[in-house]
Length: 331
Image (cartoon, rainbow, N blue to C red; front, side, top):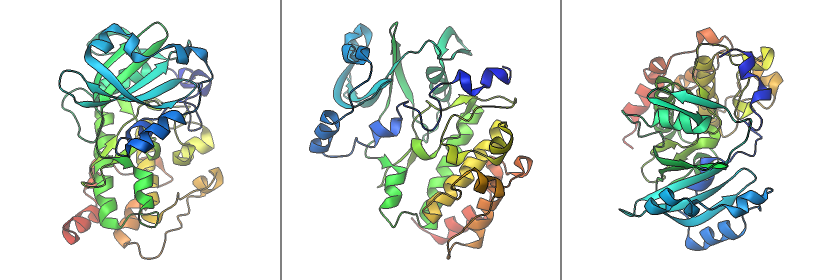
């Protein structure tokens, strides 16, 4: 794949401001009340394309034979989100229905000769054994001439990680952040090992508030992992690395580590480290008082402006901050 193939013009709607539906919108509502569910359904935005109103997953024979749609959660221009159940055993599932676009990227993956929509291919890759408990598993997928829809596991209870942080002054205590970040790093590592680049952590992480188990749940803004330069950043631009801001080019792995650093800073400080591209390039970190030296050091390593100097996944997990947190808390 050439650099030109990865130009932003080839990926309309694959940036942080896109209309692409995010899985956190469906999963984070699975633990709310029935009244909230009804409100979510009745107040969902009307689609801007009539075809969405004409299609329902139950119209697909194979889908209807295996699954039942329980609740419509959201309806947008390019797709709809539902909760559902597996008819055979009553297992709860999430359902994401996406309208196909003529410009959608199609790829093949090992052991699969058919060309697949990019999002389908990527979630199939990360769902291959050995599975990672911190990455959502694809259970099934179906397609028509105009749609594809994904059926995935539905964690319960769960809530959006950002909303979880708001429960305690907008940020997490270091021992809790340590538990969260361990799982985020494992999820990112799993994706890389399965050939998937995922840099957009903030909008795609759910947490079980009881167990603190974290799960990466959406691949609408992911890409195929490659050793080549990327020239499109398909995710939240607040997580974009300085090399992309300056040169509109970046290598995948260092960009993931940068995103890990941004997320860790946000979790422990309650806000993003950078407000604009100028601040991303300058790299000055406004740490809040009271953070441990170990935590600040790990963030600084991940947010090193030189991509070649950022740590590996193993170096992150072996960092003294994780060791200290594990020793100092019995949570």
